[in-house]
Length: 422
Ligand SMILES: *Cc1c(COP(=O)(O)O)cnc(C)c1O
Image (cartoon, rainbow, N blue to C red; front, side, top):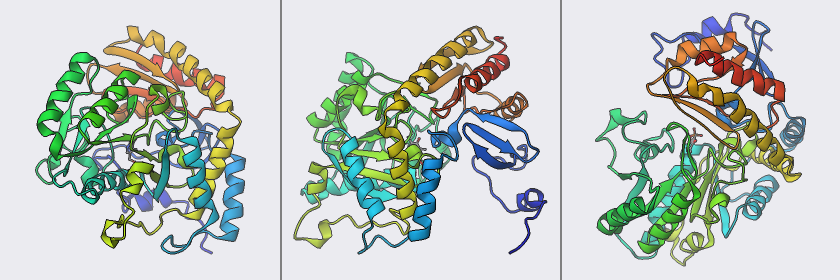
């Protein structure tokens, strides 16, 4: 075996294309050599408290021994087999557990490897649902300003058109119908009017329930979701909840939909599904959607099958992550994180340029009037011993649920210092 190259970072920097990055001017990334609990260990030995749980994935913290043990056992037995024509226990068990865990009759899981692909699959399911039922012309989607559903070409079309990162590509893909989220009776009436006009071309309404995450951590209430359910039913369109960010406890309930007491026709899951260890996603459909694909006609089937779909290692990690949710301790932890964020970030209201401070579940947000200098702030946060990467106009915290009180205090103090609020 080759000995590790001590100069890997300098050598590789000429060859790695980084995400969301103007590489001519960006600072170099921080080299991470290990993780544990809620912390990143840097190459120079420093430890940073992770305020983001690695893009919202590591909900139980890093290197959890239960997930690590499940992965070790699974890799010795069977790292991967194709899912076409073959079955394995990790995926079948995971599908059964997701069906049990999700409310209503969201019972049919289609697995993929990333969030964007799960959203693409949900969109494809919705389009074909109507075709299979003999209804032509429902070729578009209705989504919302402030929304984010992924970076692939089709998911870009349902993201916020201006705030999103993809306005550059206007005209490349078909235009969808983008509306304002209904926040009151007037909003619902306006969306009803829009659907009366455009409804016959719409296959599904797509929304991130309770929190529009990457679009700026924008919150809305359960009433909005109930209105969307009513409107979807009234206009014969499907409702897709993208719970890739909100799923698995982040907002305080297991799934955000549970706060509204309603269910979508399809839900997408990813991010925290494997507890932050391996890429895995699912589009889970209701029985009504699933049944529209059952037929004597082979063409009515869903023609989809990512090569690494339902990867046994990823499914084993997801099952182990669900084990950790089973004792219910996450509820107290999310409540504890929530109070620490609310208390620790509240003084930021008085900070320079701050227009709002908000907390929901284990999500804490400080919003500014203008976009913030992300690279500079990341560097200053790292000096303060924390890993926080702002986004657009917001500095936000989405730590692991197990983050100790002292580390939560470090995170909120670092944000207060940056905004000049103590
Ligand atoms: C992150 C995210 C996605 C995209 O997931 P990827 O795994 O990055 O493709 C889609 N929808 C929401 C709500 C997300 O937060």
